[in-house]
Length: 194
Image (cartoon, rainbow, N blue to C red):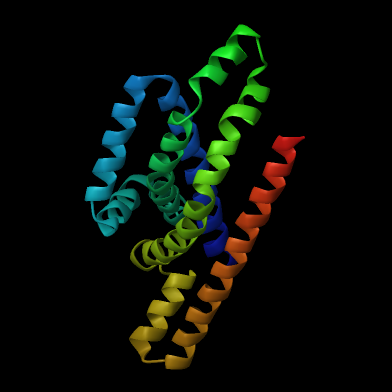
């Protein structure tokens, strides 16, 4: 069961990283935004179970949850991060270029404040979504030995105590993952501000 939460957590972080990276690249090169917006739009139209089944067919391994949570987090974070990067002060960016400000300082002082404000709430909501869809992906794709599989098996057997135990574990793990993401965000913000 611990592997379930590791896959969900790592997939969520991977999706946030890829979403923010794609949004930053799209804010720099306008043509990329059209491409990424199309990909995000297509992923929003496709039902989640279809994406899980497609990943199962393509991956043939036990990391379906990781991949699926990365897709869910990417879709959730890309548009918010792009809006934050796109709302930058162009005058400040131009001054940074004229005075040859290093890229890390440009990011720290121009882009980071906008991004930090924009993704705070989205990240918290995204964790809940990733956990819900990650457990669903486990039920569909890798039921044996996973938390989603355990909950499904308890439901199938009519074992209400087992099912409630699984749901309580999910709720507690969701709170723990949200706290971990919050602490990682605080740590990252402190490191970037230094």
